[in-house]
Image (cartoon, rainbow, N blue to C red; front, side, top):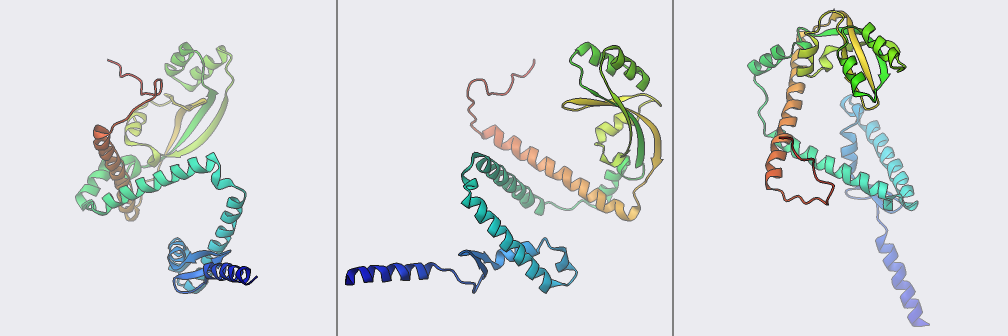
Length: 273
């Protein structure tokens, strides 16, 4: 009997010792799961109210958000969602993306900011984003991708939107017309260079996975970026280009030394000679 009492006492003491407390670096405990000051500070870093000076209320609100998040995560785990293939695949993808972003950030932190003359050169090379920026009005015909390569070729050779409509109608392909506006700042430089050379009324086709859109520029409204905004826009665009170059350079380097083995039928297609 005495031995059973001792065992029960040991179990009770062990359970008590495992109970976590909100003290020190632990700002709250949710069902025995800690929320640390580091977690709270990370949450606050993304809270706009901190910048406005309302730190105390922001801290309290951020902590409640963290508590709610912990409760929902605990419920998801209780339902076994953390063991599902969907969760495991998405977790791997999220981890991959996080590590890649950290890799790029570390490299960017050691990269010198562009100089004033480099920014000016960038602006001059990308007029669609700065001095030559415009808002285009597009007349459009939206249609499902044809299965026939012959029809696709005829559409690509069309000299007007009416010709596009005629090709589609003669081949029994239904379509709809639409109008939209687009800011030239969204165009990559190579695409803008092609579109800016189009003759008045000449269509260009933008294919998608299931449908294509034939467009004609019917109006061009000047919308130059104000000088006080141009520098920030140029810096952001240049940093994006830097990120892409860093990724491509690093990928080229690691691919050259990597050992990659494919299961038959899963390898990349052979390069055309």
